[in-house]
Image (cartoon, rainbow, N blue to C red; front, side, top):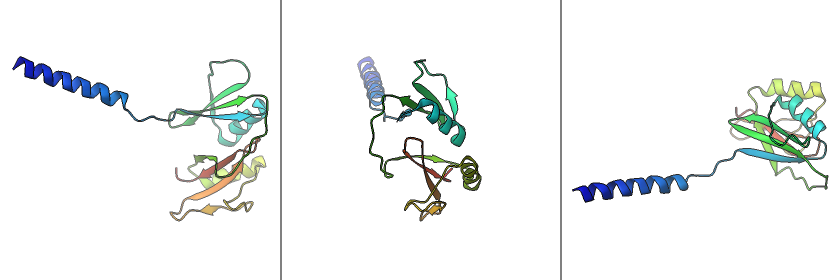
Length: 148
């Protein structure tokens, strides 16, 4: 009986350890390579009102933002090399009020458009979610939707 109980405990612990090591990976942050850290910091602070986080490097070329859902975005300045930027490769942020967000973009002079690139237009997905697209100062595409 003791051997059977001991075997059951060993199997249970082994299964727990195996399950823990096989856990699904999760995203913790996004890193965005930028040409000018001050310009990009102002953009993400002004447009999205992301809160800056304490960053460990303290080297003047990293800024970390809290982007919600226990995630962060790190913008990193490095010697600039031109990058190919395609709208299919984009970051997406959801907002609770698309109309208010668009008004903010307009007040900041940030242009937006729908997927085909029609300036000032909103894309409506088949499920009713509204989407717009903007570019950050380095040309990276950002989708904003109201799937909040």
